[in-house]
Image 1 (cartoon, helix red, strand yellow):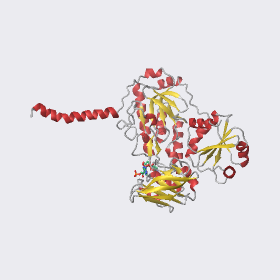
Image 2: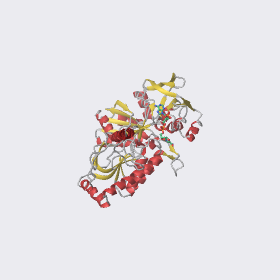
Image 3: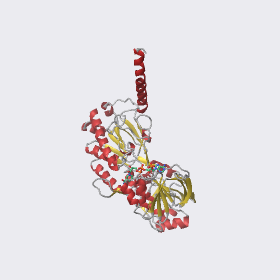
Image 4: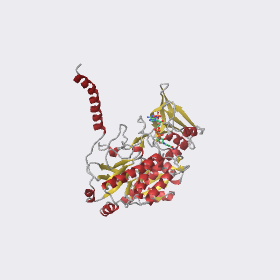
Length: 487
Ligand code: NDP
């Protein structure tokens, strides 16, 4: 064999490997060529140094650090103001706080960030143009502005099982929020799908209310922390079944009545009577805004970080929390990443030549209205109020049935107050605390056949007539569109 041929044979696999790696690189690492010219940014209107998308532990921790660094930071709270922790009960693993309610912890972080000057806006970013710098952003409520840097802290959303009956009976017995809906299942039998920490938390929330709660785990073991698993077995009315998967949900008269449970060891399916199905089967990253190829996502849709930083594949874009973390997923980790993202964003801005004076110049050319206009809802609880203000009233009236421990109810308040303001004169919105057998509940149930099974429940009346009931969370824009249909 000639010398040249030998060299060729050795080099061939190496050349193939290099070509292959290059190809992967091209597919995985999107390249957007943009120019980061500070002078160009200064000529434009409505430019802010940093926008933070999402207001969970990562977003608010980033806001705290940005604000303390003297950078104008706008946080867009998104569909879940203050994030997923507002939907859990007690947190016992936040260093320095032995036991604290998730919503209380988030409220503390929010107030801390605000005290240093962070602005939190109850709106959601709906579009980002990453092909120009400063990046151009648009919100659901139509605000338009530009940002020199973006911190993405959009988190993740609870998964569904994608099985027959799940959608149909959503809010009618199928739910992902035990904190909100546990009181509706008093004395009933419910199941939980999942074997992680969230599923355990659901047991803690449900067991004091229900007759029986069963956790259905698809494998031979739970994934939850040992301490959480131990607590599960301390409830006499809670049990765990392994190798079980829910494959269908059945209902009658708008309520869940049964499920099919597949035993993947015995290979048998059994139908069971059940009143409620709680889902705790993990989360998917909220990456809708980031699809489009400008920024690298991994094969599961999580944002890819640059080394040990919180920088994305595009300069000026940073991320923190569950949108880029599929393994640790702890609130305290998310908060730490928020801090790192803020420090990285600050370094990026300084590297462009950003100074306090430049911040002031940008401020003078910022005209977009970021105020949250609202009309607070009046609470009603008496029969006379229901008759005078709703059943004998002209025009459109909305009753917002809420619960005291219901995070979705809290999330709906900004939407309801904004719509009440926007449609004042055309629509009246009242809030009603859901209490079984309260005068209002009794009249609606017995005289008008309106059965409330979940909070929040929005009841729409027109000229005293019941028109519709909805239970899904709605943003301001979605709620506005929905209510306008009845005008
Ligand atoms: P996890 O991803 O940890 O657990 C999901 C569970 O659902 C697993 O048991 C998984 O099974 C199961 N599952 C997934 N898909 C399906 C399906 N299609 N059908 C049936 N079962 C399914 O999610 P969690 O929401 O529980 O937790 C997320 C993160 O948040 C974790 O890091 C957790 O530690 C943290 N957390 C911490 C809390 C605390 O400390 N207080 C409270 C709540 C969450 P399998 O194991 O077979 O994949």
